[in-house]
Length: 50
Image 1: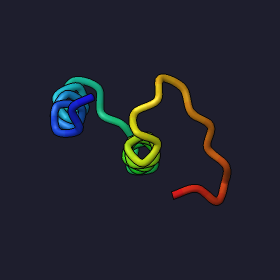
Image 2: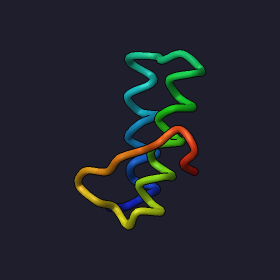
Image 3: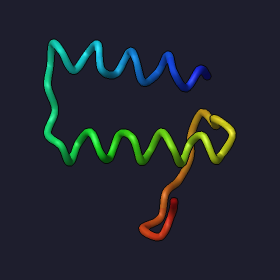
């Protein structure tokens, strides 16, 4: 997965369908956690991850 392409695609979509600040923060947090997990197709997050 290309981290920069994902971020750019996310913000391109945000221009059409804005999200709340909390939703944007959640998306970035999940992207970061999946990056640390080496881009697994599925991953589990506990409340103490990151």
